Image 1 (cartoon, helix red, strand yellow):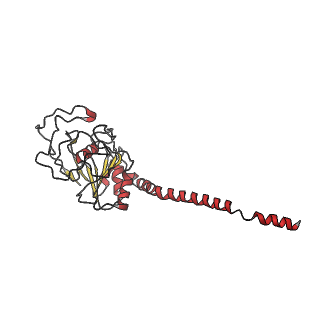
Image 2 (tube, one colour; image 1 turned 90 degrees about the horizontal axis):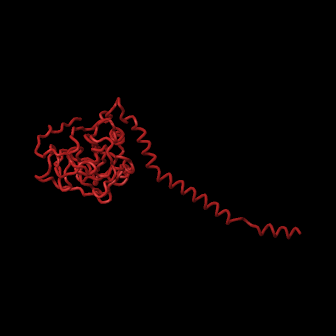
Image 3 (spheres, one colour; image 1 turned 90 degrees about the vertical axis):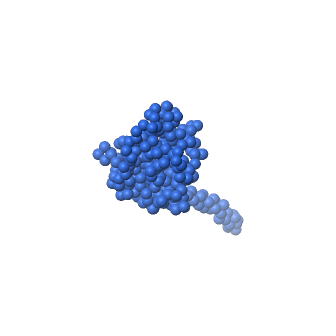
Length: 271
């Protein structure tokens, strides 16, 4: 009897199959958790940056907090001046942050454009309250590019694109405001965005205007390309009054003011 019982116990052995299965499940769960932590880290870090910049959110008492950000340059521009898709504007700044622009705005719903986009469309989006993150593709790559992208991707009233020949690694634009920077870690990036994106206090002309894609007029997956050449003698000047054949907002007729009418004074720039 003892021998029989001993032989039965010895036959049970170690449940290696169960142990291996449990170890595999634990390892899989650990890998999923690690993957999630790694993938979500940029978003969590961005949430921390945005929280740190929250004091730059606009209010009735502080309508334009960007005035407190060192390095921000401002200028005054007239809105709602449209040109045709075939026309160019001789902008006074690089990148521009106001002035005449294409009749159709660039999609600015958290869009990260992999290639440079026609400037005249990008400027129109600024008129709607968007922030444009431009960068020099020769200077911003790898981790720095990813760090900029997380500021824009999926964020309403935000867009990002390379800007060949940019004189600084990074340039932020909103209507009438610009900030040029060297480092993608600079906290002023988040302060600028907090202060000016969709600011409701009249810092851009068309409060409440859409940033959505305009079907049949602007395709964010195939936008009109950036033209690196210098605008020719037929380019529209900064004091231009608008092309009579250009459409207004949402396809409505443009204002009928003639192109030859008297112009306002040239924009003034302050620091």
